[in-house]
Image (cartoon, rainbow, N blue to C red; front, side):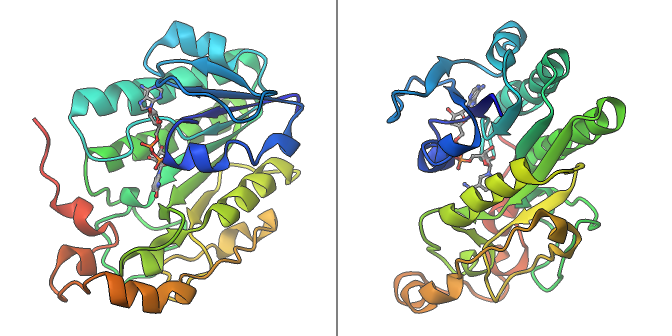
Length: 263
Ligand SMILES: NC(=O)c1ccc[n+]([C@@H]2O[C@H](COP(=O)([O-])OP(=O)(O)OC[C@H]3O[C@@H](n4cnc5c(N)ncnc54)[C@H](O)[C@@H]3O)[C@@H](O)[C@H]2O)c1
């Protein structure tokens, strides 16, 4: 690629991967609504609110690929979610269409299927069961990606990220953890595979307690290597196991299912 754009580059995930993707493109453009400094002098930093259509049009110009991490990442008031995750995704895809972007990795979320019980194993065909307005906004993002794939041929990896942190820190994360190394490897696969399409990919490491089945995306060549199992004992010592009827132990979305609608 000539230029890869990474949105949400100042966020938790963005900060952990933004200087590990330099080999994928000749130029890297990092963006966030927040001001931040890049560790890499070669990367260009552009401050941009995804809710501003004109600014997003300029942000995307000259890019061939996008890793789209930017947006509201927790349950919040609908007006905030709407600006970043609904208007923002529309602005991003329209800019991608106008500027000829070929491929996008969209950071979707396990919260699009959060009301499925933990006793179910889900694949890409599982019905959407969002567990809040945040989850609904990610369903919108997935739908936008499908529309722009079918109508304009823009390919998107819909990565339903589980819990992307340095380590799993509670019992639910033993099922949902995605290591940074595995995410970086997934980004590499997404931008290297000859034909991507618009697949759903569950973003989780090689955890024996997984609820998710990625059999449909074997063609990506992604083999997650980290294992939450290696942290099982540490989690048992540091985190209290939820009671069986606790939403954290009942639903795949865990405690997000208990969030109220924020007014
Ligand atoms: N970390 C996880 O475990 C996890 C799980 C599921 C999904 N995701 C998704 O992955 C992405 C990254 O997650 P994260 O944990 O780094 O979240 P984060 O909240 O730390 O980072 C998101 C970034 O987006 C930026 N942002 C918010 N509104 C914006 C706007 N209007 N315009 C431009 N930028 C804006 C924020 O400033 C922030 O830096 C998010 O889209 C999140 O929904 C993350």
